[in-house]
Amino acid sequence: MSIEIDVLNGDASWPLVEPLFTAVWPPDVVAKLPWGRFAFAYPEWRVLVRADSEAVVSHVGIQRREVTWNGRKMRAGGIGGVLTREDSRRRGYTLKDEGATDFALLFCEPHNAPFYVGRGWKPFDGEIYCDQPEGRIRFRATAPHVYKLKRAPLGGVIDLCGQPW
Ligand SMILES: CC(C)(COP(=O)(O)OP(=O)(O)OC[C@H]1O[C@@H](n2cnc3c(N)ncnc32)[C@H](O)[C@@H]1OP(=O)(O)O)[C@@H](O)C(=O)NCCC(=O)NCCS
Image (cartoon, rainbow, N blue to C red; front, side, top):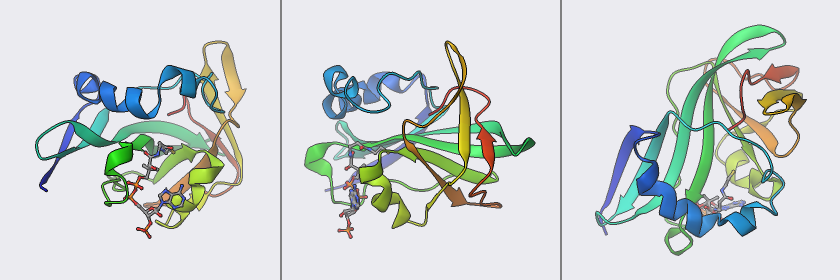
């Protein structure tokens, strides 16, 4: 089996990945998840894995965001929408790379935390704030994890300065 990996503009590539999102996270499933009621930012880029030049079987959304950590501006690489089609899992398609910024940050449900910890991500033990349509909130729906690039903030206060991912 051959695979192709593309990095595409987030908005333009949405039609390519929508079937994967609908298959893994149909609306009735999302509605019951701890993060289902929150508004999320759209990724700037999407990394797509296609098997045998066919449908997209794996996806990671990426964005760069200027956040604050304990009031200080930092560049975060946001990782979100990590998902692989059920019939294509356990083949190592799930991507973990991120570009040049201070640190990478993702949020996951507790049952997925060992997957990321096993790949070098560390739990962030502080407080996360973000924007929602109703205003600024403390975000506790999913567990933040940090991947060290230049820095590895593991505690304190991170303000996402926008919607979460
Ligand atoms: C999380 C997900 C992307 C992993 O996909 P995958 O194809 O299994 O990942 P890979 O093939 O790259 O890695 C497989 C390895 O990760 C491990 N793994 C997968 N999910 C895991 C989990 N939840 N906890 C611990 N380890 C996990 C597997 O045991 C396997 O380990 P091995 O290589 O030692 O055998 C996939 O299960 C998925 O799409 N889930 C639904 C969407 C989701 O919850 N996404 C996460 C959002 S934060």
